[in-house]
Length: 88
Image (tube, rainbow, N blue to C red; front, top):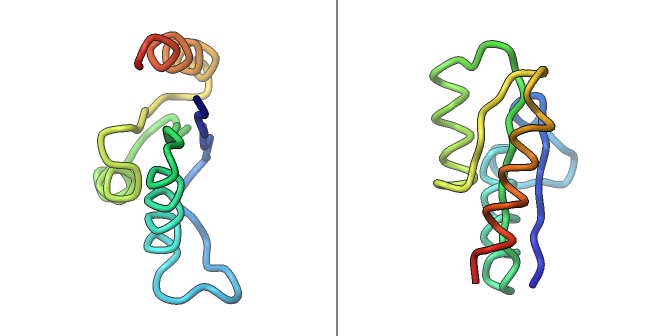
């Protein structure tokens, strides 16, 4: 099995060659990976997560996203790896 863990310090910036919003480009990439059997998890790092950013991140990654501060990234990554390693 394959897992893609995306660790980000914020929402995506605009990119050349992308149609639509940067968030829609990420959503499309996540859906593409999942359609090929790849598990995708987004880890959002910020000491304070704004509600609007939380909603945008959840829109891109669905329920497979984690919000953490800089001091707990390693702990959250370990949790993700432990959880997904047991999911069949």
